[in-house]
Image (cartoon, rainbow, N blue to C red; front, side, top):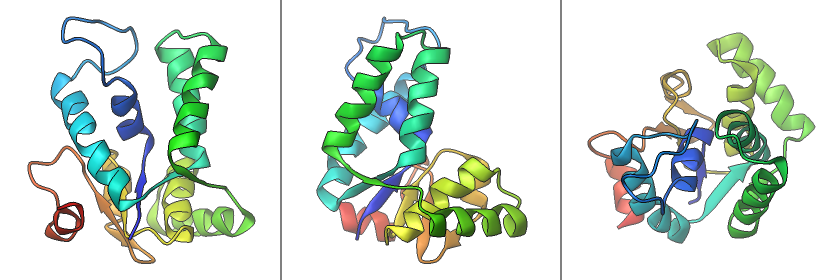
Length: 161
């Protein structure tokens, strides 16, 4: 069973490797979350990771607008994640499902695209810090999980063991 990752988790994971004293403008400075992302990412990778194309686009935007990286550097980061994980495209079916989610569950459309892409990819979990996404609970077999919670759900913890 694969796991999809949302933008915030990928942003923290992108920050892994910086020294505790490093300050990168616009990127998360929450060392605890960076450390959790760094520790959790290899375990997730063994389970199989899907990254919705929407997430890679959002990562690009965060790196350019908030972190002040050159677009070419942000593109390189996006391409490196694309080489590591399976990318789930935003298909017509994903977009229609996202519109339904936005209408019925009150999600912002781009958050709904991420949830719908995870479902389309057959993921069992979506690792997302976003509270609005997690309020969905589950959608088409995808359980929304906060990677920074004190404990992961038993079903995901067992999968990653």
